[in-house]
Image 1 (cartoon, rainbow, N blue to C red):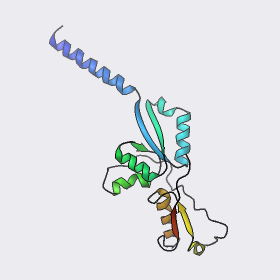
Image 2: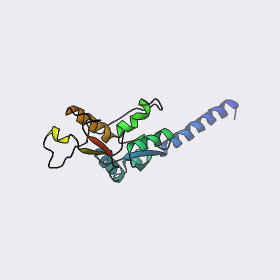
Image 3: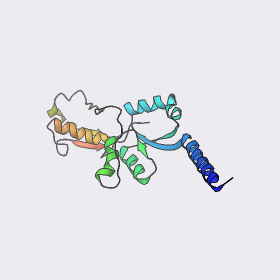
Image 4: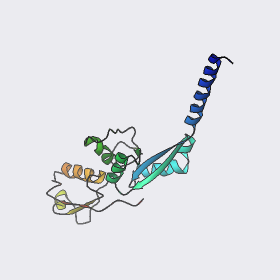
Length: 168
């Protein structure tokens, strides 16, 4: 066999090897935090084995807050997240890491503000304590947006308490 045939055969073999390797599932570590639409979607994907059907080996890891999950992404422990977009964008805002949103499950915030029976108007919220998951989390950002929309000052009219996340 001539040198030209050997080179062509070698190139063909390497191309075939890399093609076979590309078809095998590569491990992907994905972070998630809290519950909601993305959690429900993730459970359906896992139950129906949709990752595997598309050649992906996805390992979902629960984080008690989006802020901690964001730290794990900066450290390289996870490479993607399916939840808490505001916290995941914080490394970009801080200039630490280049990240981007490539897809969303819904095009609106999925948070609710739940109050006790005694709260009937916006004014009734003044002086009250409001629970969030963690400072800097989606719940923190969302409640501050909602309070400003209601013409309340999040830093003065209410007390915001960090109380932890919903269970996995």
